[in-house]
Length: 213
Ligand code: AMP
Image (cartoon, rainbow, N blue to C red):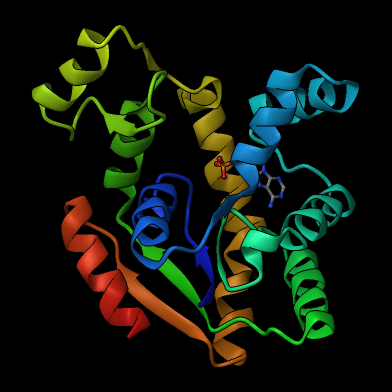
Protein backbone atom coordinates (compact mmCIF):
# COMPACT_ATOMS: atom_id res chain seq x y z
CA UNK A 1 0.00 0.00 0.00
CA UNK A 2 1.44 3.35 -1.07
CA UNK A 3 -0.36 6.31 0.37
CA UNK A 4 0.01 10.02 0.98
CA UNK A 5 -1.61 11.56 4.04
CA UNK A 6 -2.72 15.10 3.34
CA UNK A 7 -3.99 17.54 5.91
CA UNK A 8 -3.23 20.67 7.89
CA UNK A 9 -0.61 20.65 10.63
CA UNK A 10 -2.35 19.07 13.61
CA UNK A 11 -4.84 17.08 11.55
CA UNK A 12 -3.47 13.86 13.05
CA UNK A 13 -1.40 12.62 10.12
CA UNK A 14 1.52 11.52 12.29
CA UNK A 15 -0.61 9.75 14.88
CA UNK A 16 -2.65 7.89 12.28
CA UNK A 17 0.40 7.06 10.17
CA UNK A 18 2.08 5.46 13.19
CA UNK A 19 -0.98 3.27 13.84
CA UNK A 20 -1.18 2.27 10.21
CA UNK A 21 2.53 1.49 10.14
CA UNK A 22 2.18 -0.89 13.09
CA UNK A 23 -0.90 -2.58 11.58
CA UNK A 24 0.22 -2.92 7.97
CA UNK A 25 3.93 -3.30 8.52
CA UNK A 26 4.90 -0.52 6.12
CA UNK A 27 7.03 2.48 7.08
CA UNK A 28 5.70 5.91 7.98
CA UNK A 29 7.87 8.42 6.18
CA UNK A 30 7.59 11.77 7.92
CA UNK A 31 9.62 14.47 6.20
CA UNK A 32 9.20 16.62 9.33
CA UNK A 33 10.87 13.87 11.40
CA UNK A 34 13.67 13.47 8.84
CA UNK A 35 14.31 17.22 8.94
CA UNK A 36 14.20 17.33 12.76
CA UNK A 37 16.78 14.51 12.84
CA UNK A 38 19.02 16.59 10.56
CA UNK A 39 18.56 19.56 12.91
CA UNK A 40 19.48 17.40 15.92
CA UNK A 41 22.55 16.17 14.02
CA UNK A 42 23.83 19.76 13.98
CA UNK A 43 25.08 19.67 10.35
CA UNK A 44 25.23 22.92 8.34
CA UNK A 45 22.17 21.82 6.46
CA UNK A 46 20.48 21.07 9.80
CA UNK A 47 21.19 24.57 11.08
CA UNK A 48 19.69 26.16 7.96
CA UNK A 49 16.67 23.88 8.10
CA UNK A 50 16.11 24.79 11.76
CA UNK A 51 15.56 28.45 10.92
CA UNK A 52 13.03 27.52 8.23
CA UNK A 53 11.17 25.08 10.47
CA UNK A 54 11.12 27.44 13.45
CA UNK A 55 9.54 30.13 11.28
CA UNK A 56 6.93 27.68 9.99
CA UNK A 57 8.12 28.06 6.39
CA UNK A 58 8.79 25.32 3.85
CA UNK A 59 12.17 23.82 3.03
CA UNK A 60 12.84 24.15 -0.74
CA UNK A 61 11.33 21.69 -3.18
CA UNK A 62 14.77 20.72 -4.53
CA UNK A 63 16.02 19.72 -1.11
CA UNK A 64 12.81 17.86 -0.34
CA UNK A 65 13.06 15.91 -3.60
CA UNK A 66 16.58 14.81 -2.64
CA UNK A 67 15.39 13.73 0.81
CA UNK A 68 12.37 11.81 -0.43
CA UNK A 69 14.21 10.09 -3.32
CA UNK A 70 16.84 8.85 -0.91
CA UNK A 71 14.25 7.66 1.59
CA UNK A 72 12.04 5.87 -0.94
CA UNK A 73 15.09 4.01 -2.28
CA UNK A 74 15.60 2.26 1.06
CA UNK A 75 14.59 -1.41 1.08
CA UNK A 76 11.86 -1.01 3.72
CA UNK A 77 9.87 1.22 1.34
CA UNK A 78 9.83 -1.37 -1.44
CA UNK A 79 6.54 -2.93 -0.32
CA UNK A 80 4.73 0.29 0.47
CA UNK A 81 4.85 3.41 2.58
CA UNK A 82 2.80 6.10 4.25
CA UNK A 83 3.98 9.57 3.36
CA UNK A 84 3.30 11.98 6.19
CA UNK A 85 4.04 15.63 5.40
CA UNK A 86 5.10 15.11 1.79
CA UNK A 87 4.15 16.41 -0.74
CA UNK A 88 3.39 19.89 0.54
CA UNK A 89 3.54 21.85 -2.73
CA UNK A 90 2.35 21.21 -6.28
CA UNK A 91 5.96 20.92 -7.42
CA UNK A 92 6.57 18.22 -4.81
CA UNK A 93 3.43 16.39 -5.97
CA UNK A 94 4.68 16.43 -9.57
CA UNK A 95 8.14 15.32 -8.43
CA UNK A 96 6.67 12.44 -6.43
CA UNK A 97 4.52 11.38 -9.34
CA UNK A 98 7.55 11.31 -11.63
CA UNK A 99 9.64 9.42 -9.10
CA UNK A 100 6.97 6.77 -8.56
CA UNK A 101 6.33 6.49 -12.31
CA UNK A 102 10.02 5.78 -12.82
CA UNK A 103 9.86 3.09 -10.15
CA UNK A 104 6.65 1.71 -11.67
CA UNK A 105 4.91 1.98 -8.30
CA UNK A 106 2.12 4.56 -8.45
CA UNK A 107 0.24 5.81 -5.39
CA UNK A 108 -2.81 3.87 -4.26
CA UNK A 109 -4.44 6.80 -2.50
CA UNK A 110 -4.06 10.31 -1.17
CA UNK A 111 -6.06 10.63 2.02
CA UNK A 112 -7.16 14.04 3.24
CA UNK A 113 -7.47 14.23 7.03
CA UNK A 114 -10.26 16.78 7.30
CA UNK A 115 -10.49 18.51 10.66
CA UNK A 116 -12.24 21.57 12.17
CA UNK A 117 -10.11 24.64 12.86
CA UNK A 118 -10.70 24.79 16.65
CA UNK A 119 -9.71 21.13 17.00
CA UNK A 120 -6.53 21.81 15.01
CA UNK A 121 -5.47 24.59 17.35
CA UNK A 122 -5.92 22.41 20.46
CA UNK A 123 -4.08 19.52 18.83
CA UNK A 124 -1.16 21.77 17.93
CA UNK A 125 -0.83 23.84 21.10
CA UNK A 126 -1.42 20.79 23.33
CA UNK A 127 0.82 18.39 21.44
CA UNK A 128 3.73 16.77 23.35
CA UNK A 129 6.15 13.94 22.54
CA UNK A 130 7.43 11.57 25.22
CA UNK A 131 11.24 11.83 25.19
CA UNK A 132 11.60 8.16 26.09
CA UNK A 133 9.21 6.43 23.71
CA UNK A 134 8.50 9.02 21.00
CA UNK A 135 4.80 8.53 21.75
CA UNK A 136 2.64 11.48 20.66
CA UNK A 137 0.51 12.83 23.49
CA UNK A 138 -1.70 15.85 24.03
CA UNK A 139 -2.31 17.74 27.24
CA UNK A 140 -5.96 18.35 26.22
CA UNK A 141 -6.81 14.93 24.84
CA UNK A 142 -4.54 12.29 26.41
CA UNK A 143 -5.57 10.74 29.71
CA UNK A 144 -3.67 11.75 32.85
CA UNK A 145 -2.59 8.11 33.10
CA UNK A 146 -0.88 8.26 29.68
CA UNK A 147 0.83 11.57 30.49
CA UNK A 148 1.99 10.27 33.88
CA UNK A 149 3.30 7.03 32.33
CA UNK A 150 5.88 9.09 30.44
CA UNK A 151 7.01 11.29 33.31
CA UNK A 152 6.90 8.48 35.91
CA UNK A 153 9.30 6.49 33.74
CA UNK A 154 11.71 9.43 33.83
CA UNK A 155 10.69 10.86 30.43
CA UNK A 156 9.95 14.45 29.51
CA UNK A 157 6.90 15.73 27.66
CA UNK A 158 8.57 17.66 24.86
CA UNK A 159 6.80 20.60 23.29
CA UNK A 160 7.90 21.15 19.68
CA UNK A 161 9.46 24.57 19.17
CA UNK A 162 7.31 25.21 16.11
CA UNK A 163 4.12 24.47 18.07
CA UNK A 164 3.94 28.02 19.48
CA UNK A 165 1.02 30.27 18.47
CA UNK A 166 2.97 32.57 16.14
CA UNK A 167 4.58 29.77 14.16
CA UNK A 168 1.34 27.81 14.11
CA UNK A 169 -0.47 30.75 12.47
CA UNK A 170 2.19 30.86 9.75
CA UNK A 171 2.18 27.09 9.26
CA UNK A 172 -1.59 27.18 8.77
CA UNK A 173 -1.26 30.05 6.24
CA UNK A 174 1.43 28.14 4.38
CA UNK A 175 -0.79 25.05 4.40
CA UNK A 176 -3.68 27.04 2.99
CA UNK A 177 -1.71 28.68 0.18
CA UNK A 178 0.80 25.95 -0.78
CA UNK A 179 -0.62 22.57 0.25
CA UNK A 180 -4.40 22.84 -0.02
CA UNK A 181 -4.20 22.99 -3.84
CA UNK A 182 -3.01 19.37 -3.70
CA UNK A 183 -6.54 18.32 -2.75
CA UNK A 184 -7.62 19.20 -6.28
CA UNK A 185 -4.45 17.73 -7.73
CA UNK A 186 -5.26 14.30 -6.30
CA UNK A 187 -8.99 14.65 -6.93
CA UNK A 188 -8.21 15.08 -10.63
CA UNK A 189 -6.06 11.94 -10.50
CA UNK A 190 -9.02 10.12 -8.95
CA UNK A 191 -7.12 8.88 -5.94
CA UNK A 192 -8.39 11.32 -3.30
CA UNK A 193 -10.18 9.94 -0.23
CA UNK A 194 -11.51 12.22 2.48
CA UNK A 195 -11.62 11.19 6.13
CA UNK A 196 -13.44 13.09 8.84
CA UNK A 197 -10.51 13.53 11.24
CA UNK A 198 -12.46 15.06 14.14
CA UNK A 199 -12.89 12.78 17.14
CA UNK A 200 -10.76 10.33 19.07
CA UNK A 201 -7.66 8.65 17.65
CA UNK A 202 -9.48 5.32 17.45
CA UNK A 203 -12.59 6.76 15.81
CA UNK A 204 -10.51 8.49 13.15
CA UNK A 205 -8.44 5.35 12.62
CA UNK A 206 -11.60 3.31 11.95
CA UNK A 207 -12.65 5.86 9.32
CA UNK A 208 -9.19 5.81 7.80
CA UNK A 209 -9.28 2.02 7.44
CA UNK A 210 -12.72 2.26 5.83
CA UNK A 211 -11.44 4.87 3.39
CA UNK A 212 -8.54 2.62 2.42
CA UNK A 213 -10.61 -0.58 2.11
P1 AMP B 1 5.76 18.49 10.17
O1 AMP B 1 6.40 17.70 11.27
O2 AMP B 1 5.27 17.64 9.03
O3 AMP B 1 4.71 19.45 10.67
O4 AMP B 1 6.94 19.38 9.54
C1 AMP B 1 7.63 20.34 10.31
C2 AMP B 1 8.30 21.36 9.41
O5 AMP B 1 9.27 20.71 8.57
C3 AMP B 1 7.39 22.11 8.44
O6 AMP B 1 6.73 23.21 9.08
C4 AMP B 1 8.39 22.55 7.38
O7 AMP B 1 9.18 23.65 7.83
C5 AMP B 1 9.30 21.33 7.27
N1 AMP B 1 8.80 20.35 6.29
C6 AMP B 1 8.33 19.09 6.54
N2 AMP B 1 7.93 18.49 5.40
C7 AMP B 1 8.17 19.36 4.40
C8 AMP B 1 7.95 19.34 2.99
N3 AMP B 1 7.41 18.28 2.39
N4 AMP B 1 8.31 20.44 2.28
C9 AMP B 1 8.86 21.51 2.88
N5 AMP B 1 9.07 21.62 4.19
C10 AMP B 1 8.73 20.56 4.96
